[in-house]
Image (cartoon, rainbow, N blue to C red; front, side, top):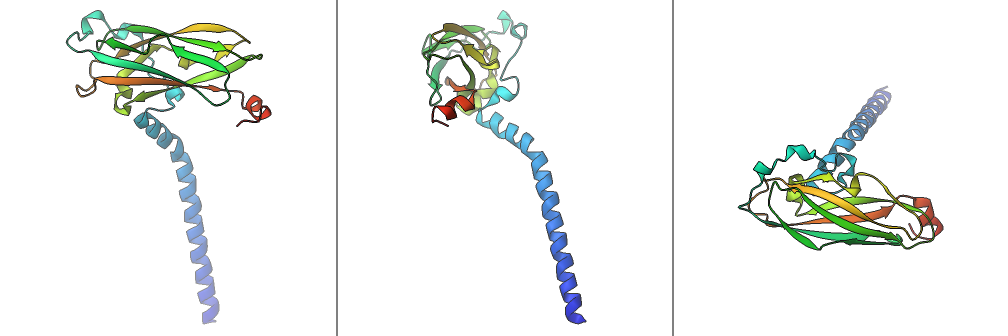
Length: 191
């Protein structure tokens, strides 16, 4: 009888532990989205899930420009493997004043014989500058569709917030374009 009681207690204990594991996994599943957003916002990656730094241009008025500081903004472009596009910033870097609205453009061309829909994913280095780069208009807000051989200029309007820490004098804005049609990449033997 004692042995049966021990076995029953062990079974109940195991059931309780397994039940707690299930509850913990369920809670972790709910916490994944906020944790993912937190990690991405801290790292400055994949911020297309939210506004991507989008702001209204009327938030920045000419009187708020800090002409005593100059920040160098560098631009970088990367194409995901298998995307047959050209992507080049019109300029490699600009010098800007915090609070000043700036416009630069990017040249993109589809070198393939098929229509391609792609999405730009922005990244900012150093990551601490991410929250101070405000994009007013950006091709990264929407997917871009280019017909075979089509090219276009894509504008980027941005502001560096005057609250950018004094220690940051240069930041790099990178865009990685990715083909949104995963089946086309798999058919081409890439993934």
